[in-house]
Image (cartoon, rainbow over all chains, first blue to last red):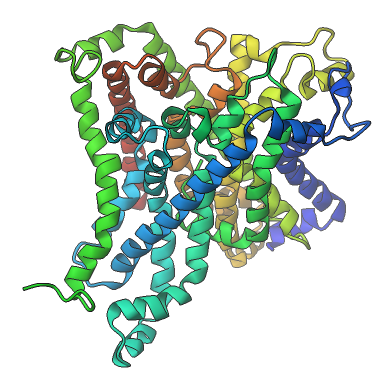
Length: 280
Length: 292
């Protein structure tokens, strides 16, 4: 810590206030939704509104699953994000290994091409991607989302993996090859296990990206059976009004998996973000 | 000669390993760009008549296009600096010497991981006329006698969307800047202290210049995503009231998906692409100059 900070921030009170401010900013929206989701119907239409639930109930969660196909949205999101993550890792690990290790003439240019694709506004490609998927007959299928998500994840994953591959000593690989491994054997037995933390980091970033994507999911997979969570919850229809208590419960269900993932692997996520940080 | 598949030469292996990535880029990025330009020259669909630049003339005369462009540019001009300032503030606070680091770190990661569409839904609930927490707090504070329907008033709806975008995107900027702050060597502050620099001077003459590379990275990615703003206005207002909060991305989505007008959708997309190209070009030139 810098001297500059020590003077002012040596006061524990001020440090507490600073931490409280950051924590409030980050957690309040999720906390408020959580509180909304456990209020009963009578309390929700009470005016003035209550802050703390008077009689906590789980009925909104049950309704979220029975009134709307939330389970199916959850399944769709898991399949799409899971497949997109696995495929992103495979494709970007191949590319990253070639860029980091093989004797390529245009190494930098190739990496730039891959990273530059992320500078391209995805929205402008909505029309042709929509047409392509329609031509393949893939609208309203998982593949319509998985393939674009892999491209979406390619720059981040490749950047993270290139830097991990470069950190593995070449000698280890050479030693394996002297011992009779082929280059592919050395990749599978030596490099990939050592790069496992990097693969894992890239995987979390890819999963969060795919889990969160909205525009393509809304445009290509709007039919109820294949909706992902963000689309499904946004298009929730109440009989008379937008059903906020049920929406809140559904939001909590959708946020929890991702919150657990980032809570468990905070340091890796932060490390990966600053290495290949590309996401609004 | 057939390549040896079990132990290919380095060149063959490189081509094989790079092929999947480039095939995907070809299918999802390169081919669509070509298709986009081609489509923009046809009436409604590819079966319809070739009409040259008519779509472009139509788009440029369409007040909806200029309205959406204005909204998009305004959102970018407001939310990018806004998120940068809030993100820098959060990063400076999070960089304090806390004994336990995880609560603060998680507080920055959670908004980052939250889908934009969920942020839109949650803030729309905050701003709900009858049951929203914002009106409730204002009433309790005695600042409001009648509840305000924030999202039904054009200017307030626009402000609400900007606020939500700033909140949602500032945590990513804070994470990038926090990493940058942790790289600044202590000795720089010590030297500044010896030279008698005030805390304010240290901030502007040590922290900000040292943080510049991180700030530029955050600015570029934030600007590119700001130009594509879709999720938050879609979930909060659907572009309303009227078209007060409609962005270019929403207009493209509307023409393409709702009106099935591929030609107009493509023309709008080309225009949007040109706008992002100008902005990105400006940044790259600026960075090039800084690096030199």
